[in-house]
Length: 260
Image (cartoon, rainbow, N blue to C red; front, side, top):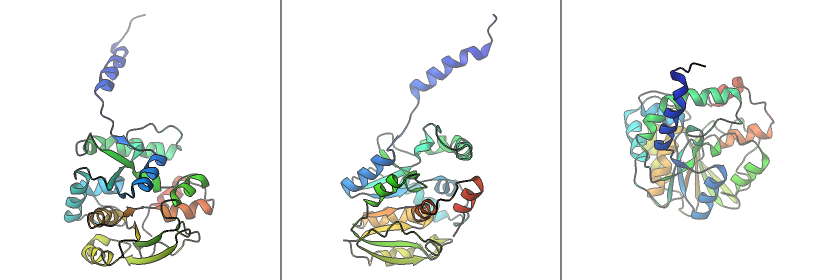
């Protein structure tokens, strides 16, 4: 049987695989283990942050040149033993086991943006999994996450509407909870005020930040100021969704990731 040029693609793929750089991104469990064991702060980078870094905007944050600069500064910052940067585990791993909507989105977004991201990151760094806060699918996983703040004094910095429709609070196992509220939309426009308020928090308290891309910057700045600060993304909505047993459909996901 006559062969054609497509038969040789397997050799090209083999050569590509031998030179392929895959960043070290901890999985769900290892990310949490590292945070707990070393009292780490975490700033997470996801599709929203990478969209902003390339001049775009997202539903709850307009393009802001200063924010773009800060995000790039943090992503390219030197290794810090007390601080982890989160990258999406799905960026360089198989979509096996995911629903078709998520598979399609991951392939589209990360296929388009991975080269840009890899050009900025450090091949010698270990990264957290950005997705450890987004829609874990079992009680066991949420129980594992809760170990981070269980029986601790915590302060949550969040948008003023984040907890408005939440009936099941993932942070209820904390010893005590204080709240500092910020704008739900375009929080970075008042970032200096948010940072000033955050720096009045007792450093013995764990700081949890739920504030979109502003949380990425705030966790980094607070870590440098001597706090343990965690950018926890959609964790509050994720846990409430799980407890309410919502069906995870494409329509639901679009609403879930919209502004509060």
